[in-house]
Amino acid sequence: MLTNKDKKRMQRMVAQRNERLKGGRFWDIMEYLITLLLMMVLAFSIRAVIFEPMRVKGSSMKDTLQPGDYMAVEKLSYIVTPMKRGDVVICYYPNNDEYTCVKRIIGLAGDTITIEGGVVSVNGVRLQEDYVTTGMTPKHDGTYEVEEGCIFVMGDNRLVSRDSTDGMVGNIPAERVIGRVRRVLLPFSRAKKLGDIRYDI
Image (cartoon, rainbow, N blue to C red; front, side):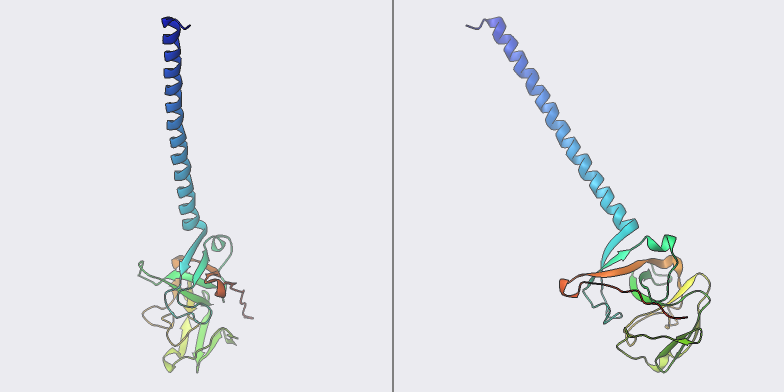
């Protein structure tokens, strides 16, 4: 038979246990929220600095990239390695921070690009461009000098691409490049790695 004193002691013990449990639940919730916050920070950091999936919106890179494709854009390599002719990149047009475009690097700083009758040459060497499935119009013909600190880009679908051959675009400053397109992620039927293209220049 429990005395009143024993009952009161048990009630205090139960109350203390309940307080500990309440505190435990609080810290469980706090731990969950902190973990969630750290995961969000990590995800945003990866997207901002390392890797970002992006969707192709136009047809200027057909048939390499199709409208609606999701591509993997890698952002670190150009910090330690130079850009190369043939790389497919995401960049901003000069004086436009709102829209990005996806293009192929044709020329680097100091290069002379010559286009004549649909044939592209860099520093007098004709490019072998198996990725181009459409021709060009006479408006593309001309000679273009790539300024220091800039690149010269073109779309693979030359008939519709707004690129460095357009006087309103011209050379793209290197700091306007966001990253290099490494592969097509979706749709699965088109998933592929974009192979390295190197010109013998």
